[in-house]
Image (cartoon, rainbow, N blue to C red; front, side, top):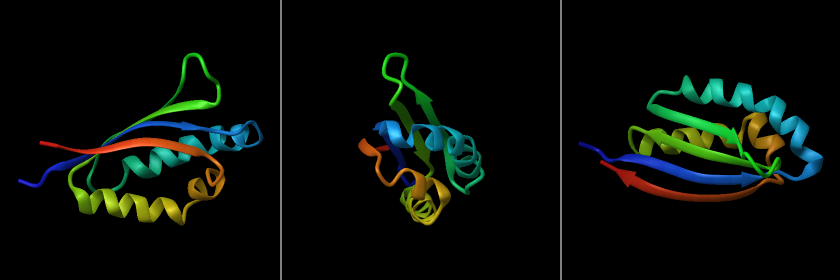
Length: 94
C-alpha cells in the first residue's frame, strides 16, 4: 500500500491580497476536492489572526499530491497567492 501524503501548516496573507485570496478560496477548495486522490482539504481562517489560514491536506499518494501541486501552480489560486508566506510540514501517513 502506498503511503498517503499529509500537508499541514498555515499561510500568512498580506493585507493587500487578503480580499482576493478570501474570494478565490471557495473555488480553490472546490477544485482541489474534485481532484483524483484528494482525501481531505481544509483551509480555514485562524480564530485570532485575520491574515492567517490554517491548512490541512491529505492525498492518497505522492503522485496525487504532485498532481495537485502542479495544478495549483498554474491556477488562479496560484496567481492570487504568489505573495503568501507558506509554513507547511509534509509527512507520510499510513
